[in-house]
Length: 521
Image (cartoon, rainbow, N blue to C red; front, side, top):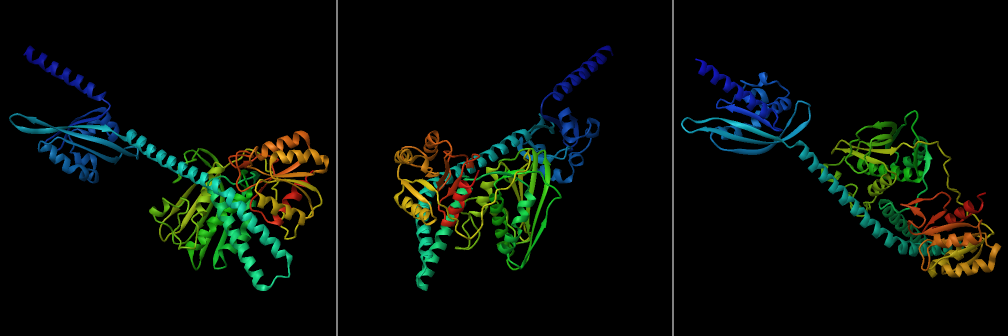
């Protein structure tokens, strides 16, 4: 009798030690009998299921897992009870309400004489592994997108300089020819068509630079509500009278720092897309609000950071987009429109602008249910500034000062010199930086301002400006280029006090820019 008691105590002690051991194994362990009932489970199993051991043991698998989850594993359980070793991956909703991924191993318990008595369930938690794998996939997609943008940026930068130079010559000479007057109707009409085609080409290049984040910008601290309000009339003209435009601004919004013209670009592109998606009649709704995000969720994973944002939302009740289209909408040149109806650069430009300003965006769309673009601009912790407005007068602004013009492309030098002279300025032209320095020494205090290309042989425009101002400290200047570069800007953002005019430019734009700089105290 004593021997029997000692043996029973030993068996219980061994059972306790075994249970202690399996409770500390970082995996879900259970034993299931031939009737699909839990005989024993470990602590991890309790935690995953959100039940105590006493609630689980003795119960059937179907009861504990629920019919839906049981049906997923029913075949595997039957195979295990037929003596087959099973290994598979699956997912389920855990006690915390979140999706959990696991690797399940069913190991049959086969007695030599009586056959299968049950099976051991050894389940490894793969949730963290799957999360890391998903993050790697997302990071890989981001890297692919960044490399693609860099490639487009290099292409845009390389092409834009020469392309915009050529467009500048076409636009400049066309504009001056139209001003001469006395042209017959057919010639005048042809020149106007050339002018329109060249301007469309220039706009296309600018959109490409916008996507690649290589266009020159001058960020200002703005009230987004006021900037959007100023755009409403133009948006109304863009989308047409058959589409209702509704504007619901927050009562107040935090300041954001962005070039106001970029807000105009974003709204114009989104509203034109909305118009095309709506077709005959519908509604576009623009809203703003402040929001603080702890864990922002977005299709565009790049740029998501917790913090304070001003949200600009554009909704339409158009045809919407399916998942396949949504995955490609920010690709340069991707478009669902017919040939000749779109460039495929509108949303690419929006993407580039938002990333350049350290924001991010989210897109929600379904076929037949419209589209919502949610754009998050980081809150600027500073005071509002005064928005610098470009002069929009249609009159040509003239002057009388002396300008040192530096341009290594002969056709651009000749054309810009003609423009300046027509505007009333005295022009000293130089085709090389060293020539410009010699002419500056020779003419001394007679020069009121220099105007230089950014990219030139011998030295760039910034270096030339530095040398000129070393000799003449108060000399004003304007940089011109077909694209901005790190020579005068940090990732396209112009330094304070740097004046820039983008090629190609019209005589009207040139006149306004010169007076802006020369009249500044």
